[in-house]
Amino acid sequence: MKLVVGLGNPERKYQGTRHNVGFLVLAELARRRGSGRPKAKFHGEVVEADLGGEKALLLSPLTYMNRSGISVQEAIAFHKLATEDLLVICDDLNLPLAKLRVRASGSSGGQKGLDDIIRRLGTEEFCRLRIGIGPPPEGWDASDYVLGKFTRLEIPPIEDAVSRAADAVACWATEGIGDCMNRYN
Image (tube, rainbow, N blue to C red; front, top):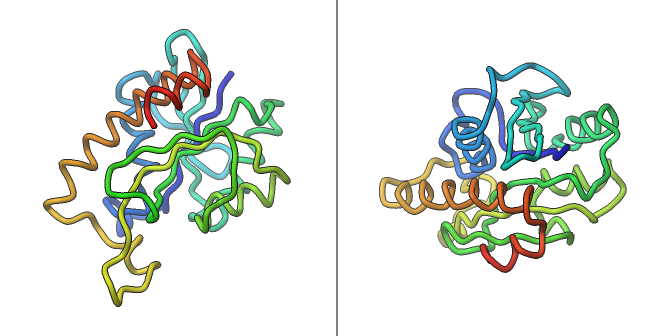
């Protein structure tokens, strides 16, 4: 079984913000491949999915971004999963808008959700899919920027990136991280 985690913040006021792009990808995956309604579990919402013959749990932590590791740690422990069966999807303000970057491991790069997951799991050895949200405009605070909504002009490329990211997740689950990186980076 695979665990696919999309990072974001709960509450209606955060819907459509740059920081919630991980939630958008999980919503697209659930629409395409999910079975049933979301269930409250692991301090989050879980949807079961079939990713090309691979059983997967789509987990949206509801702990807020900076405490995402609580949810991930519980799900991994409950299902006795290895970290190679984990893929975390998050925003990245160091990447150009709508650019995807898939990695087998690495640092948090300053992303607070990844930072908490790394700290709680005690390893950087898990896959991640970053979606570029672009850098904050000059003079903007980074936290205000990531908690801001996409502009009208940013929405079409982000919608395309969310669709491509959902395809990348299915590729990761069925073909592995190497093929996924080759195809989507």
